[in-house]
Image (cartoon, rainbow, N blue to C red; front, side, top):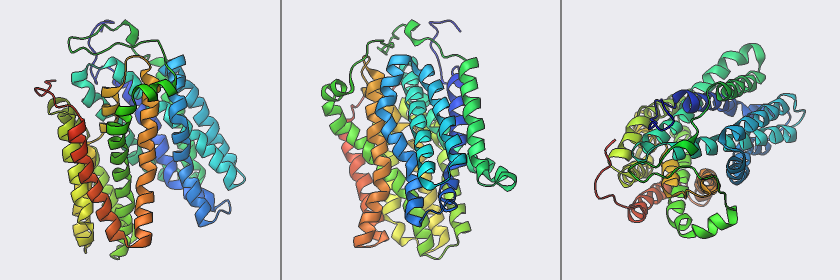
Length: 403
């Protein structure tokens, strides 16, 4: 493959998707163990919840700095530094004598995750032609989903002989392997790529400050950006609603886990079809179908009075969410400027990560003043409104793009 050959998702598989999968597996191995790790260090239920949120907070705080770091050092160097930070954070978790130190280590892991996610999104945005961008970024989102799905099983396999520390060691090994792949399999130099016939812009080494980026693109953040924030909120809300409703109708934790696992399998199955639909049918179509599917399923959760009905609704949610895999990344890539792209995407990811934290908060707040059923319907209605708003804000192409 020459420097000027048009890349495809397959051609960057080893350089992009394999390390992303490995890093995602590491994250998946740690996430289920955080609460137990906190309680074994004497944490209350409330402090355990804070520990669970620590990685998300670290990622949120790292989004904008990640964009600046990638812009100044390049994506690969930024990820290698982030790998060192991740290993340092995991080491801190392993030796943490108390929950505060544990939270600090988890926060560092979250920061490193922000750099990894931003760098891979920015690179694919630069190197992929527009007609393949949806597939490329949906696969990137899919690698994260597969990693989070596989990671807990690997953690379960090693926690027997190693205890809770086993999951953290899985993440250490996965992070080091991912970093090794980055060293051995270099990225294509996107600065050598020429603009394609579709007008796709090449990388630009000129950077801009975060403040200027936000000022220049305020309208985009206030419309499509807020839509992406809402998409993230609805997605995370379902992760709260399904297990809580399963408990409310008397399902055992094991049965609830099976339902959630089934939803995850449906989600993974629709990753590539969703990316193909973004490229062939357009982003507006995918936003509409994905959000409408999630919204309708959330709205009728109160009618799910049996495990079978809840499993069916959870599967619909998984299919709808999988169809939108990589959607927020693709929307951010589409509206990102050629100059200061990494900084822009850092701010974009900050918005979507706020949405990730906002969904469970809304569910908790509405449930506190009414009930879980009303909270689920509120988020369902929000998803439908979001679909309608994004159809208005996103441009309608004259013809579907052919891949």
